[in-house]
Length: 242
Image 1 (cartoon, rainbow, N blue to C red):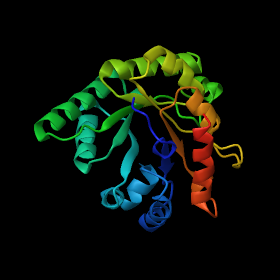
Image 2 (cartoon, rainbow, N blue to C red; image 1 turned 60 degrees about the vertical axis):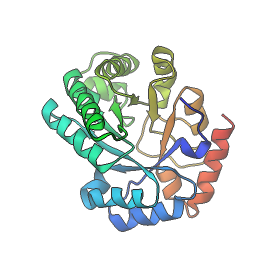
Image 3 (cartoon, one colour; image 1 turned 45 degrees about the vertical axis):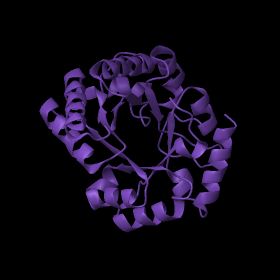
């Protein structure tokens, strides 16, 4: 992967309930950020219009909707994401190999037919809000956390996906297994100076990058700050030190 500046590695999560709140954050932070994450809460409230707004100011969108359905439905959703022109979007790897494969193939056919850039297709492994006990006792998955993440990432790679979303705690294992060509996006990133939240498997930006992450997803540590640009500068300084 080509060299990226510290600000290019940060994906800022727009975890807010509406269009106006999201636009306010985008406009305040666009000087220091290239990629904004639009998740379920915001997309349900604001729809494709928020994606178009972010694109209109020259920024990229990571559409974080974690598609998880029958293969044909997810392939259709993948095409809709491609038509929106997003930089990256994800499906949930627990949907299985065939679901991921059909989504990847639909994207490839679309990009060839339209002669457009193919969005990065990413598989979500295990949410960072889950720990070992939750995974085993509630989901009924008997593997260890790291073994399950490795298994799902292997399925994603075989299905033609560009990378995975995984805890930074698993990044070194994934990088060792898949090498430099496989993207690793790590949520659950919390600078040492930020308050705790509902994510259980967290690391600092520097730790995540040293373990092999390509992109780090940060939200409230920046958006809840009185001065988000100052928070971004502190995070970028930490990334530069990694």
